[in-house]
Image (cartoon, rainbow, N blue to C red):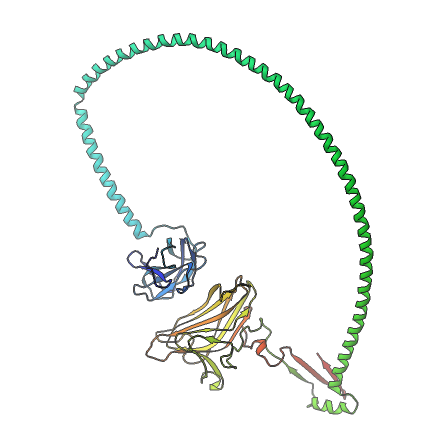
Length: 519
């Protein structure tokens, strides 16, 4: 139970002396534990809550990895250890200034199936040693007791004579006592028999009186019940008459309502017929106007219109298409920094937009995340329990981490977010190296389920590793959409200047005549 009384809510303790575990890089582990708080993988030391976060970290706080989530207290949390192989320790975080939450029965084991808690093998060896010492002490005590018993037995001759003398004296005393008891019980038995006869007579009298009283009460009861049944029968007859009158009135109302409804239905049918005629006329009118735009309003306009369409004697097609319909629309506005930093925020002025040779040879700008940046996307709505994909194009160097969160909440909530879901934790490929690449722009894709939430925004966090060297991350073409299929970037529908639907026109040359086919 952490109890360091912090100034904020980062109440934690690293159990260096009490815990140790040998972790292997690339090995799969499962962590299970019990708590009176709420296990999570979200470490927010600025906000008081009942959350509990478990860490595995080195003695000097580096390296580390959060190893708890919502499943820790039930089915267990599955992780892959991505840090170097070695000895690590358990750290527990709670988020109250006082020690109000605790953790127990923490178990870390290889594999992906959690088992019931049991002590570590090293702890078991200590228990065996302690039990062995206790046993040896007990055995020594038994040997001492046996020696005393042996000494007692050796003096048996003297005690046997004293015991015989005591037995003779005590037997004489008990015989005298038994004689006195027999005499006393005989007198008591005679008195008891006389008392029993009197009690039997009183019982018979009580039985006779009770029988007479019961007969009288039963007769009175049946008279009362007969009267009640007569009264109930009369009330039922009255209720039936009232119900028949009500049903008759209800039947008349149903007939009247049916006649009124039939008239209303006939009126609606006539209105619908007129509406269908008007709709058909409108469709014919729109089709006529379409052909006028293509062929012209007169015979003189037709050659000029067709000459603009025809470029050779072969069949050709003009097709205006937009973007891939694979997956839902992009939920992120200004996702390529075409409008600068519009819709995107960073509280400490650590977000910029600039060009670089790695992207369109410096002809287009990108988002630039400077060290310590916490960037928030525009808020958008989502479908509950749906699968979503996030694609990012980027490059970086001298990076310490790059994290992506989905900050989500339910409909009607006034909070900025109710839960912070970790989408991606990016570590550098080597010390002072990149998460994406430091040679070219590369694409990364992340797929995850939204859960039971209705809206939210994406949060991107970046920091550099070496403070004496340049560090930063460039990103662009962010595409967040429903579905799990990969696709090329497309803008949000609100950012597109033209309609998404494709418009196609095909003109075919057939034996000297022209046919225009819209579809």
